[in-house]
Image (cartoon, rainbow, N blue to C red):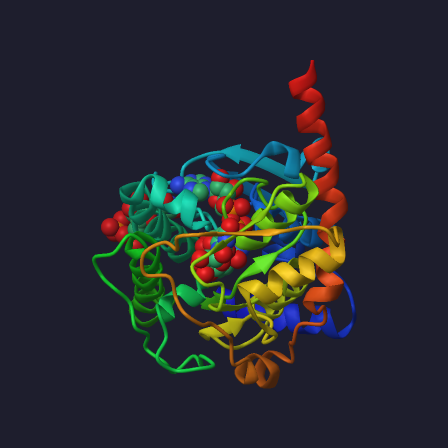
Length: 343
Ligand code: NAD
Ligand code: UDP
Ligand code: UDP
């Protein structure tokens, strides 16, 4: 098939160390849905840097033009305001499908819209991939494991998810998106890739998106107490965004469908995270306890042996090195905000 042809050519190109090219020898053209968001904008930077043509599709629900403004005017970059719930016609070689709010505060804001984005949005992008013979990568989530009864989580674990809870629009939405992806692969022969992403942080996260790393960092900079939900003994494993972007690209270019866990196995309680933020930003930072949200997973840590073995990928940046890398970006944006208020 044509898409098989791409694969061999891509491999050849990689061997000779040149930029991958698409059909008819032109540069590889890539769609990134959700490319104006946190992860998407970093991915776009890396793809443009590698010499690819990139089209971003985003409805700016949680994404911002500021994340991409440095690319405006670049002839290899295009930004389309579009909602993936609606069909779209494009001609591309690869589709990175990221469009979906990721923070619990955002995805619970309009849960029906979140489900629609995950189901209709993913269906449309798979329909597009099928029509044009493009390779499709889904950014799924560690949330498919729910409140896991297996620890750490391997890809073979089927999860422990509440189908009727406040988080279900996201968890079940992503589970359905994985199902659709595999059905298009088996039924229509679409070349697909599935990544299960674990908690990721870095510059360009929304300042007030309610996720724990962005909350603690913004609170410490603003000299407000860090809000610890529940007893703070629940755990998460935090991955720096550049590690994730490398993992997504290795997955797209590799030969394996997945699903693959992409995350950093370094596991922290929320109290330990608060301690690291304190060491990094302000030794006098304090914490304040708040009631926890419903169905909060008690622990989460990826088993990444599969990605290590088959994608030759593993994260390089531990939390204590990654946190300082987002602090300047947060400081600048908080400063601008304060100046805006003063005017
Ligand atoms: P984000 O909210 O910063 O980015 C999501 C982007 O998708 C935004 O630019 C938003 O405007 C856009 N979007 C949302 N709904 C859309 C729609 N209907 N049509 C078009 N665009 C739409 O989130 P992120 O952290 O960058 O996450 C990116 C992807 O990675 C998401 O699919 C998320 O589920 C997944 N993921 C992220 C994490 C993480 O820790 N960041 C963890 C697991 C999975
Ligand atoms: N689709 C799209 N762009 C395309 C091809 C399809 O947005 O280039 C949408 C299409 O509108 C449909 C979905 O993807 O809603 C699934 O397409 P498919 O061809 O698999 O299913 P069908 O249209 O036959 O129901
Ligand atoms: N959390 C917290 N304080 C905050 C925000 C979140 O203690 O200000 C906790 C939350 O209860 C959860 C963990 O941090 O146990 C991770 O939450 P987040 O929303 O970042 O991501 P999740 O992994 O739940 O999707």
